[in-house]
Length: 116
Image (cartoon, rainbow, N blue to C red; front, top):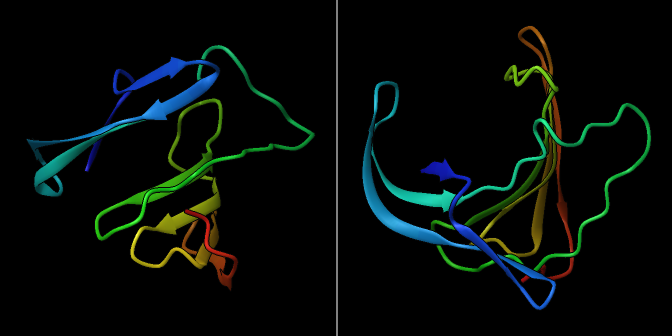
């Protein structure tokens, strides 16, 4: 899957992130068959201390992957905090991970209420 900042809309204070089937060739992963909307605060918002709140309905079904990630302001790939990763075929399993600089990652999976 690839990501686009153009595949979302806001109507009546509700943000909807879209996905579309579109083949994109990636040098590392080969042909990717889907493009998903992505919201980014890069260049407009950052914080060092505090909290992040989200209220969302995640889609169900194989292939859906609802996520909330925190990335460094430099846009480097690490460290990355995965606050929530929800695989659409496992709507009661929340995945939380810290991808740290270097070879070590830490994470856990939690059984939660259905998040769809």
